[in-house]
Length: 115
Length: 113
Image (cartoon, rainbow over all chains, first blue to last red):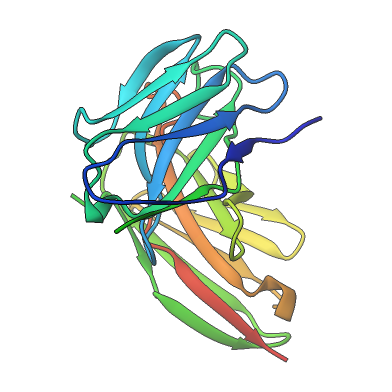
């Protein structure tokens, strides 16, 4: 069973640029959630995708957007990067959204630095 | 609004000792309370989880104690080992939000040999 993978591992961008982060979900999982983890903080929920549709969004501005593909992999796009966007971006996959008990499996994250 | 509050921020324990991390939540709609362990450079990994219909759950050296009336839950690590040194996060989720996790701020645990 392949775990959750994310690319790239590290990324450096400048303020105002755009970035795309990628996530491959674990085999058999159809739900992907994205989290932002600032240094020394707990992860914060950005949004979730289920069967290619957004299924819930946290307190993040519209310049954070995403996609889910038919193979359930996902992208996180951030436009007009700000310094405060520097963080570890985590992707988590799970089976379905019909319960809060569906275990979420996290990838290793993408470390984004905005200069 | 911080819906899940975690303490302490950091913890140093001697090898063989008991590590205790506490969390408090506000939203009574939460119905799933997992604990995650995160090593540097890695994503969080599920350690143990509890539902509000039980007061305690034990898996090996790890125990969750849950107090529904006080809206508090805690993680106890018995016989702590240097390999347990990591950051621990408590979290909570609601039955109608498909597993969206609300995390605490994290506790950095260091187990000294």
